[in-house]
Length: 564
Ligand SMILES: [Zn+2]
Image 1: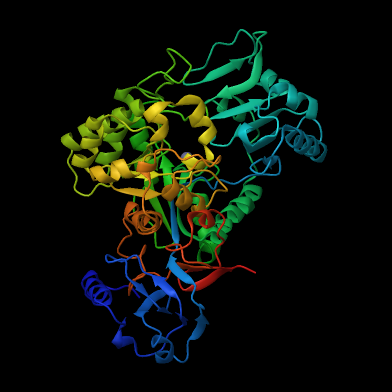
Image 2: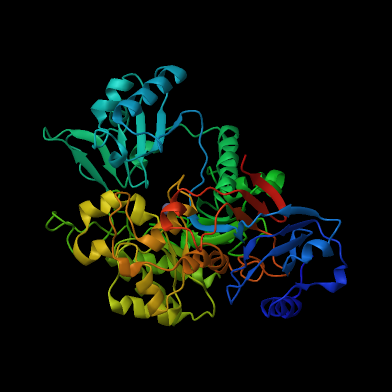
């Protein structure tokens, strides 16, 4: 049942006045009652209740423990004091999908282990087959250095190998992969990328920002294999308490892995067992003709907001203004630490990015543009500002993804004026600490992935993780402590309160996808998407947040995950 806007506001208003509110017209039957807990509604007043009642996938009532007896026919769960909050909404995540040739390196803790994984995969696939993988991070390795082509040659001399770093801004290949890519000593740096060379002048296997020089040679994944792993990746979010995601890597092109069409197929079969999803699609032909891209958008036939409560079209994303500090290729206004003259670079000219935004905006699309360095952020905001000046549109909700280096004050003021929002990843301060220490210094290091400053200026922010398999607890922890993995605190003034952090990881995500009227807080009439936590986030010591596990995840009133 869908409430009209007028009914919804009326009922929600009554709920936030206190006491129990319910839709009398529905009588006293319900499907599920959670009681005897701390139900943190994240409504306007951040009110906390004891019980919540669910019927037909939506919230029927929120109030005191007396609700339990009012719905005797409903399944009742005694929370025994545990906490309930709205489900997390991850506003920037890459759930992709992988075939058999792929190795997950997120939990790899040494180069020796990485080599072992590669050689086992080579045995499994046989000689000649491409081996791919992602998630390695030299700061997690005992040896404290990047894998190089010589490491991969030793592990798999007879297979081309390409392994992408966590953060996806660089990849390492072996000699076979370099040969197939026709990259040698004499090869100049590609546009928007960098081929690392060793002391001998030979490529060491690492290519920054242009992993595609390798990956375009890898045979296309078999759709069925990829579908299974996509399904698994999406489902895996439930145990992290994620009930909604913005997938950052989809496409309007149905022939591409991870396309909107593939997700539609997935959701038509399994939609009611998965988190809800909004798909960011890439701007078609981002560096080519903006008009040609617009033609492909029209051909797609859908735009931002189309779809349903389970799966919908999100913004145009993946149109990265620059790279990232994992490359490192973020585009900076000042030199990188220890690299005089090196400031990274933009992926587009200001004219290109402006033309793409203008075309998509005119067609009614929302944009969510990747911008990490301060130079990239300033350029993107200038482009958005010009488009909004030339083609004003109320409530456009264009946003930036990432916002790692605080841009000049002028840029933040433009963002306030133009209502440009941010999808921020508070966990980056924690899990990318090593990269930031290496590339940034002074105030720029302390304010990496700033939270409090943009919020104080009046810029709207929602949270996400970007890096799998990092869940919301890492983000909440880093948002309130500003601690890196080493335990060192970066810019304590950028911390936010746990209430603010929860709000940005739940309700504010729903605003980013224009669904704030149907989800994001636990109010009567909204979708019953919520999680049960073993301890109270509002009162536990922040150190306990980092490893807190989710007890139960409910989407649309159905318990889709329960911790053993
Ligand atoms: Zn991303």
